[in-house]
Amino acid sequence: MQRACSYPLLLLYLLYFLNFLYLQILMIHANRLRWLILTLMVVFLDRLSKAAIEAKTAEGWRHELIHNFIYLVHSKNPGIAFSIFADSNSHWVRYLLIAGSLVVIAIIAWYLVAADGVSSRAAAGLALLLGGATGNLTDRVLHGAVTDFFEVLFGSYRYPAFNVADSAITIGAILILLDLLFSKPSRPNAPNKAR
Image (cartoon, rainbow, N blue to C red; front, side, top):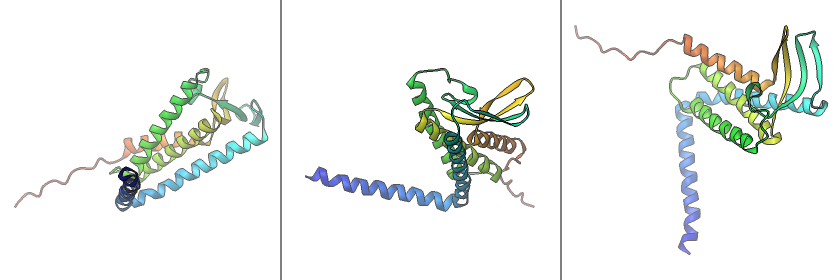
């Protein structure tokens, strides 16, 4: 009888602890939570654009927007970037990609909200990475593959099809790289010399 009563109490303590952690993060880095709005916008626009392509076209559809340059397409990529693992028929690959995406999303979300010394440029990059990874993970969970719909030709080279989430990931990575290359390193305060 006592064992049954301890579960609600344990759950109450767990909820109290999680609420305490949430409030600590809010107090320390509340201004960074605004970047999650950018993340949500990326996820929303990604899902909206993919849903429009999925509803209006069949897989394999192709339409030229700019002659020999930009095409709208409807393709599915069960693999990762540049169709790596796309030919694998193993369900384990899908589950590993989902698990890997969840780990990456958790790390990026934690770093965005809780890490010290993150500039606005890096925070924007992290928010874009988080939105892109979440958008593609949503596709992978719902459909087993990611819907891509933009294709670009550079002469005879056909760049692999991509989507809004892929674009957000690319822009986010560029912002983080720029921040790493061009941010001023913080120096610890030098001790005052006595005169």
